[in-house]
Amino acid sequence: MDQPVVGVVMGSDSDWPTMEPAAHALAEFGVPYEVHVLSAHRTPQRMLDYATSAAGRGLRVLVAGAGGAAHLPGMLAAATPLPVIGVPRPLDRLDGLDSLLSIVQMPAGVPVATVSIGGGRNAGLLAVRVLAAGDPELRAAVERFQADLADSVVTRDAALRARLAGERTAPGSAGTS
Image (cartoon, rainbow, N blue to C red):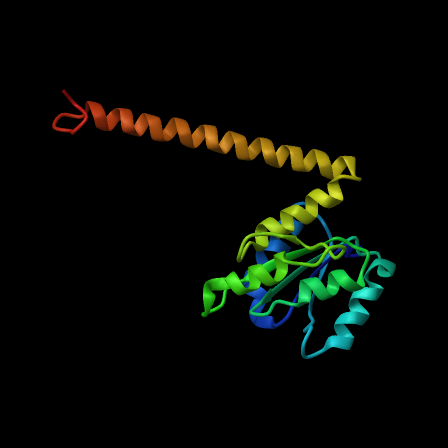
C-alpha cells in the first residue's frame, strides 16, 4: 500500500460508522489513508504523539471524528501544522449538536474545518479537495466527480418532470382539466 497521506482518527471504535464514509471517499479517489482510535481524554499523550509526528510521517490532512465533548479535532489542530477536518458525531443526547459546537467553536489561531453532524463522507471529500489543490491529476478527478454530480441532477430532473407530466395527463388524475 502507498504511504498514507490522510489520517482518519476517532475517539472510539464506536465512531467508525460515522467515519467509515470518509475512508470510502478517500478510497474512491485512490488517496492512501490510515485509521486510528485516539482519545483526547483517555490517551492524551498518545494523541499528542500522533499529532506531532503526523507531518513528519508524510500525512498531509487529518480527518477527526468525535462525539460529546468532541475535543479530539481541536486538540489535534493545536498540536499539528496540518489541516484538520472535524466530524461531529451524533449521540443519543443532543443529536450531535454538542459535538458540532465543540468542534466549530475553536479559538483564534487553532482552525478546524468542520463538516455537518455525521458528515464523514463530506469530510473525506474535503480532504481530497485539500490534496487536489496541489495535485493536477487528483484535481482532474475531483472535476470529473463534480461533473458526474451535475449530470446526476440533470438526469433526475428529467426523470421527475417526465413522471409528473405523465401523471398530469393520465385519465382521472388531479392534473387533468
